[in-house]
Image 1 (tube, rainbow, N blue to C red):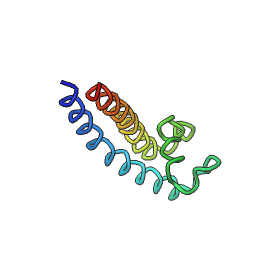
Image 2 (cartoon, rainbow, N blue to C red; image 1 turned 180 degrees about the vertical axis):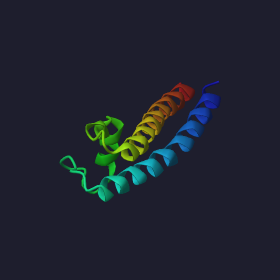
Image 3 (cartoon, one colour; image 1 turned 90 degrees about the vertical axis):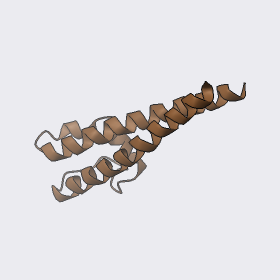
Length: 97
């Protein structure tokens, strides 16, 4: 049972991760194009920017509707990715017990 759940969560992880990366790239490009200020450490668009999106940091720019759309999708996919990874690790540990 645990092995089946492991592969199910790995499938969810593998599906949500590209969605998070794609939406994060689109949100970052929109952020650059609108010349909006970045929070400290998020200027390069890497993992800190993804974490900023996952905490819905883009809500401070209500005038940037496209950034909010891409940011919201990135946040949702990011949280799904994180939860699926945690669940997959848990299932892997339980399958070895």
